Image (cartoon, rainbow, N blue to C red; front, side, top):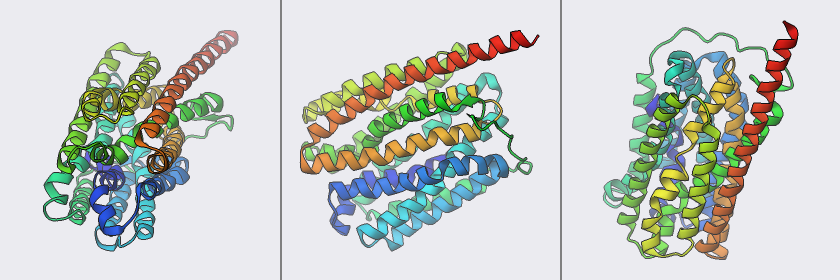
Length: 384
């Protein structure tokens, strides 16, 4: 599962981390980089909700195999066939579809196979795997791109995807998914789920800029290409560590995850404002705030969604992932355009504002969920 989820996001994160070298060869600018990565998330956004239901129907094991195979095809296509911005954007869009299937399939796999008391740490491992793509992308700069060339990094990613597909444990055939009411997605009313999807989308819009633009922003601030890649890898490692610790604590806490998510988004916003100084020292000093806090919350968010939707976790997380992908589309596009036409300082300020609004949406979404739960309890009492 870890390899499947990691390689699902690898096309986008490799493109972001290797952007300096790829832009030299393929001749595109910051705004085009944002558009190429946005294509990945457009493919994911358009198919996420549908593929969430497909994962419920096919079963998580088969869904993850299909996702890993499609990721391998996308990564190899970049390595061999990306000769221009247009061809790169098309191939990344295909990779986004693979990622759209891997996320709800992995959530469903965890919900069906993991003890409910350990869901927090299990989802933390899964979400840490997402950041594993950014970590591998950062390491690929000094280890592969600056030695044998950036295309070989995508070849290595394709090999990892194939190994992930082979390693997935076998399971029983997928059972038909549950019939859900039209005013709900899974167990949650649409109003609450849409607010939370908007919140996670805004948060992803801000955090997604790290995987796409951190290395480029570091080089623009005067950091060497190799060291910027190492910093991105260290930041990604800190995200994984925070997600694991937060997941373990969530298993002991048994609730209150969305307020923690909101707090982490606020800390991330503070880090983006420090980045806006465009100082090398501040870029390094703010690394824990932006990566560990500003990008360390998705595991807790998915835990809240899975716990709120025990009967259809794949379907519900497919809906919220749509918000994630829409945000991940908008983030690189807006950030890249601002960085090219204004400055990186302006772009980081917008990321900070977006993260703060996302925090507010998480608080509102939690209130709606609690109101729904209280209403359901009242109806249960009335029916006795």
